[in-house]
Image 1 (cartoon, rainbow, N blue to C red):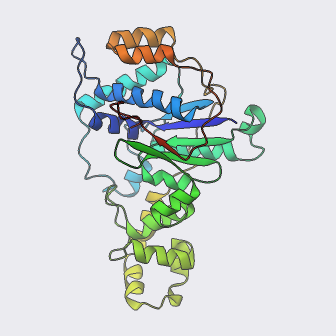
Image 2: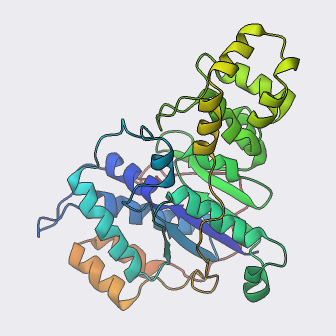
Image 3: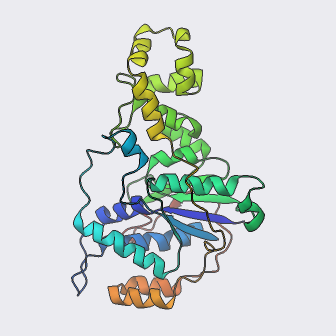
Length: 321
């Protein structure tokens, strides 16, 4: 069985940065986020046993979402300078291990991940003809927005209890978590909005009402085609008043799956990560424990784990996240 593990680079790096205390090597470099990211990466390889591995990152340039809605994520604080430096450093570390990185100006890492999973699933596509079939993709992230990508071939690996436990989310788990099937998550957010990304949805429509509407009508678009069938006049008034916001929020919430990138199956095959450059860089960064783990990594992975839940050892400071 072939398993492609895709890492949401920004989400995991941020989680590592806030999970670990400040760490500085003898050269004065701050390294806690990079250390935590690499520790997580090694644990993911151990637990999920991928045959293929790739990492996606955001780009610093504004995305199409910012152009569509200027207030998108506007409330988020500016990235800490020490984390900015570590974004550059983690790219260097990943490149030294020869793990492919995918990113595209104008798009978020979410969109890049969505586009890769779409490419590997298209029957008889150029990818499948040239590279063969990947049986399963697992996205490692802390971002629930990516649950909309979950289907028979795509799962999410997410934290469920702080830093102590992570879980594989399939279609059933995603619906239990969000209240609607994966294919309706963007519609749900179109109605309710998302305070973490700062887009509005429909004022006065909460998750309970939104879920009920989607169960009856299936999508935001279909709800607006059937306003005459809704019996609650107050709900109709709210929907009519904020129609533009609902349609815009739905677009903001939808993960793009046609980013112009080309996934390289061969380049993503998991190999011995202990390259000469990686060993030298780990030594330079004074990652003594991680260097030992790097040298002990078994690049010949066994059959991917089938368990739905992976508990993390208590003596591992960061665990998977």
